[in-house]
Length: 116
Length: 116
Image (cartoon, rainbow over all chains, first blue to last red):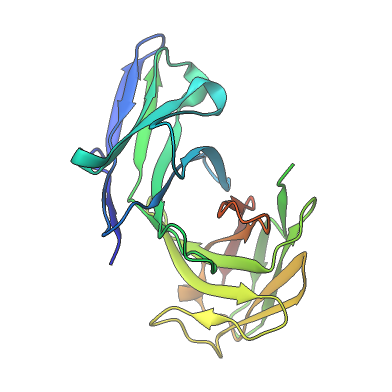
């Protein structure tokens, strides 16, 4: 069974500082990997995704993530955080090429607080 | 593109009544939609997978007679919480899978249900 671990429940960074949110997954093959962001009371917005190819993927809002197979990780990064980035971030894993509707497994989320 | 809407965004109802939540993919067709439940400060819990023209697939522990799902068209899925009770109060989020085969789920803004 696939699983996702986000070790940091809560992270606080200063505006302008760099950010890295950790995500580790457990899956037998190469999964599909996603990062979503959720603002309070809102749904989830897709930041970026990895299916195959280049292991460094670029997303929206200046975010990027790097797939490291050897570490089973897919950490999210941003070089300079803005106050508007404060939100809950979820890493998710899907079972890859199944040809059928793929269920996502979500991590428990990391709440990002940005101080001015 | 890839916009998913939910209606209503919030609803308050009396115990024992039924509540219907709609999930629509606005600019793409989705043979598969998913329904999630999210408790405060927690991750998303998949309730069921909704397939257009067929019965929904429920996750273990989710009562199918309690949470009725109908996926009547390629752009609409509905979740009906029957005989709602206070413990059904939660944030319900739907997602729609892009038919292009990109294996990406796009999420609606969520519906907050409060059962008195």
